[in-house]
Length: 323
Image 1 (spheres, rainbow, N blue to C red):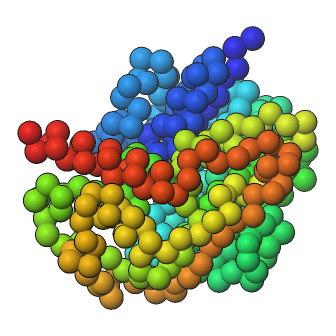
Image 2 (cartoon, one colour):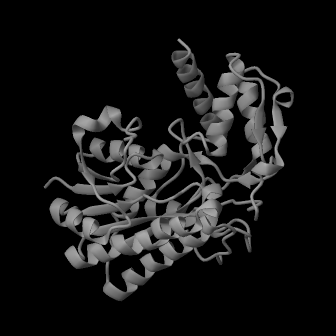
C-alpha cells in the first residue's frame, strides 16, 4: 500500500527537502499551502508534477479538517509556522496564532478525523532560550527568549498533551538550527552566504550583521528531515533532540564563508546594533544521543561542508541572475 503524507509548510526549506525525501521512498505526497496573492513555489518547482497541493490555513480550523478528510494521510508533518525570530517581536500575536494555536488546530483535526494518523510537530531549539545546561537534551528545562520561542513551547507541550490524553501517535522533533541553499535570505546563514556571493561578484561592498558572538549548533536541513520521518516509523511516539552536538559563532560562520570565496571578511562586515535581538539567545548546542541510539540518526554534512555548499550555491545563483 502506498503511504500518503501531508506536509504543512511544504513551500519552505524543510518542506521541500522532506517532500523530495518522501517521494524518493515511494510516498504519495500532499502539501498544504495558504491562499496568497503571490505564490512562492520556487523551492518545490522541480517536484510540482509529483505533488498534490491543497489550499488550507492554520488559522482556519474547518479548512484543516476538510483537508485531512480529503487526503486521509497516514502521516502528517506540521512544519508550517511564523518561523523568523525577529518578526515574532514585530508580530507577536500573529506568531502565536500560527506557531502555537496552529498546532492545536492541526492536532484537533487529526483527533476528529482519524486518531491513527501519525503526527510530527516541528519543535525548535529556540525553546531552550536562556539555557539552563549545556548541551541541551530532551529533559532540559525551557526558557524561551522570544515570542517565537514561547509559541514553540506551547506547540511542543500541546503535542505531548494530545499524545497522552488521546493516545495519538504524536512526536515532536526539537531541531537545532538547520540550514541549506534553500534557506530564506532573512536568516543569518543565508544572509551571509548571499552577501559573500554579491560582494565577490562586485554587486555590493558591505554586509551588516548583528551579534557576531552568538553561538549556534548548525546542521544541514537535508539530514534533519530524515530524522523527522524516522520518528514516525517507531513503535511508540516520543520526542527527540536533533543536532550535531557542535557549536560555532556567527563570527566563525562569517570567516569560513568569506574565506571560501577568497575574501577578507573584516573589509566587508559591519556590526549594526539595530540587528541585535531585544533578548538574545547567546548559545545553543544540542545533545542528540537519544536520536542516535533509538533512531540510528547521525548528521552527514559537517559545518564547514554546509557553509561551502551554501556559498557555492549562492555564487552560482547570483552569477546566473546577473547574466
